Image 1: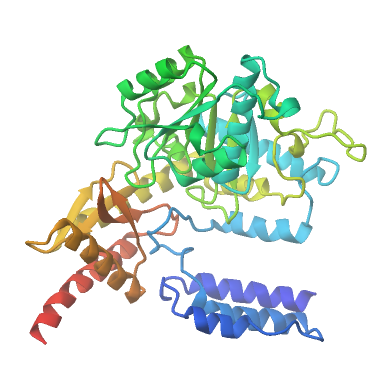
Image 2 (image 1 turned 135 degrees about the vertical axis):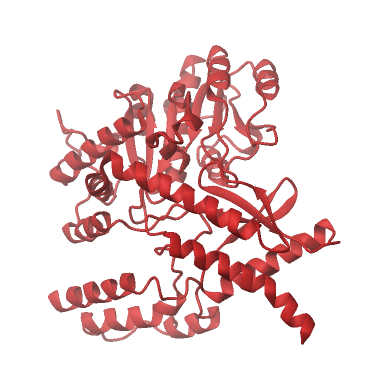
Length: 468
């Protein structure tokens, strides 16, 4: 086995060391990739080292450089050295981190990682937590606990009786919610009709009047989902106003803090999340701003009893851990990797000061990219970052709104095709914009310069075409 492992380590090191020079975009076409990997199942096997070499060779130009510092599209972090190395060990140790009995050390490390995260975010120290595959499952876990609690308060045992005949439960949501909230509602059997959209103001915050009306109209069990940095502009809701209103009406309050929860780790940006600690549950991703490898989500839940009731399972062949923590009591998975180990390693590598520095650097780089590109001819700042998310739009003099939408997509495509930087687009207040997201620990000032220069080149291509 060691030859293949040594080869994988060499290939991994080469990949990481080449991130600065390699194109950020994928250059292989779908047809090319399918032709490389298709075919009948081999009748005979190959040597492991040959499999690893061939796999790496054939995948390389079909991979995005999202682990590097010039990827500004979806909110995807890189991999801290200690976290990445720890993740390799997790695969090597191959523990089923569902029970203490299956992996005692993994259970204890995960327990400590959860304790540290609650301390880092300054959330209730007696809250329960779960490490999931990502924020999608963190939302589902949190909202399952919420469903248990609000229906129990209405006299209904959802784990025993299911949802047929249950009181009508409404989920009040910020209209800029992430799609993972919709999916979580589906997975929990509540259906899209349970969602009540709350309008937001020009800064992406739920209007107080909207929540007031929704609470008065829906007297039954309720869950309120608020944003801690939405996907487009990093908007934070007004927690100190909205959460007490919701709780006075008997609602459970859940916070989508996929990356925005990390604002609480920075003295410069923590004011954005003031009052967030008043909620009942919080969800975030480790593979975003903490920069641990995929996949890692975190759910933190104030009501331990509701959390455990919604998740725990019992079977004859599962021996309770006693004083130790069994992860299966808090997570939806029966079989799971020890994803708390890379989190522990990341927190050990960075410490509180290192995390704060990383957050502040990412925010500064985002501002520099947005303002640098926004200062170019035919470029316009749509939203100047208040955290690590900003919006830029491209339009020529005289362009209609629709023409500006098309031009924005065209310029973004040109930028991405250079391989110097990679962005994604979105729709904000009815118009297309290029989204700038910076969460990677590797992003530096050189990456910022290269991104702005790539945008400048893409815009200048119009002049070249006119001359030719």
